[in-house]
Length: 246
Image (cartoon, rainbow, N blue to C red; front, side, top):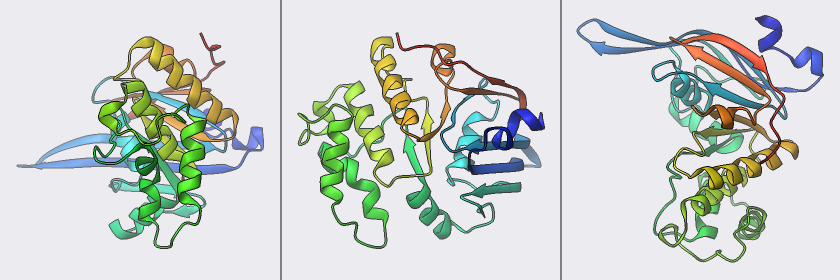
């Protein structure tokens, strides 16, 4: 298991994130506890494309929330860019998120009142310092994801696939260490989902590290490594030869 979960030494690539015996227990009152994660250890290297799979209740969403610094582990350690962030307070975690992590959600999470350019720029507003050239960078990213002719449209004027492209551009505007994708094709038809996966693969080939939760085997088959969870534990880790784009 240690070799499968820690391939950095073999590949020589930089480890951008590491979790060590991560546990998460939810206390529901009346003495009831839900053990969502039960000691999970994983390494993620620069340029990884990892799919996390598992049945409902297996712990995959909890794991993604912890990797995204959206929640605190009950125990264990989480090293991000070489720093243990597992015990940071909410304010510090917010700063970490804005600097190191990009998010892609199944439901897009765009702001309805904002245009494509403005939605892409949203992460820049969380910075404590002004980011020069932010608008120009947003325009370049919009064009990169195929939305150069939709710069001033609002989410209601876009298809689901176009909204997800906005979310992808938004996720990389801060040059994050890691992109976390939660069911990025879950609300899309198969053809549009394949286009979104093509785009994620292109970002990965350009050096982006992507960690993706999915329940779809054909989507997971596009990743380099598949981690399967069961009852809060790692059931299996398999290296994968990604399928060619259809």
